[in-house]
Length: 224
View 1 (cartoon, rainbow, N blue to C red):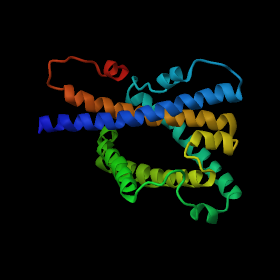
View 2: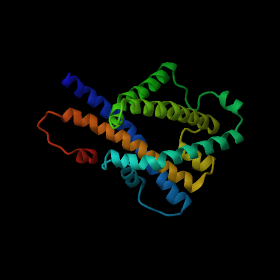
View 3: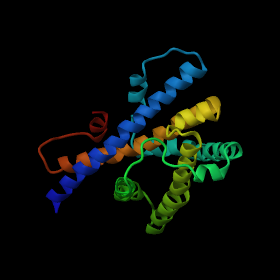
View 4: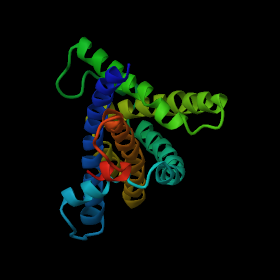
């Protein structure tokens, strides 16, 4: 019912806002690393860039325009990084490694994977509603989640086991020395991902406020 959906809206909003905070922090870290580490430009504190990287006020048209540029570039960068990694680190040594860092129980691992994908499935409707037909929505999900998301997860695991570091920014810039171009692509990629996190989070909050006496504008709610 309507009241039950409001509870669900709160859960989705908090869950995605957690991802939003993580990605925004990584965005700020990447910008500072690029400007100070590579260009020698001492700029605003990381927290300022973190806030800038969390903007999604323009709406879905802005997300689409940014994604059209960032996603193809991210694909090329990921493939190049994977090629360099496998040329440097034998694949057998990657698959034979144990946990990176402190091992976690299997149940925690399962809960993390299922929880992450549960949220992803829930918010699919936030962007598939712009599809012209039902077939377009299905094609988009198959291309994005299967041919796009699964390989990215596998590559992330390969990078983590190869360099004992989960931080993709440090791996790309420090271990693989892919330089300024990689930093710019990572900045754009994090921006698109985080815009979707905040976009769906705000929709969850808006669902909670719907039908109440509280008047709001969605762009202002996003800014808050």
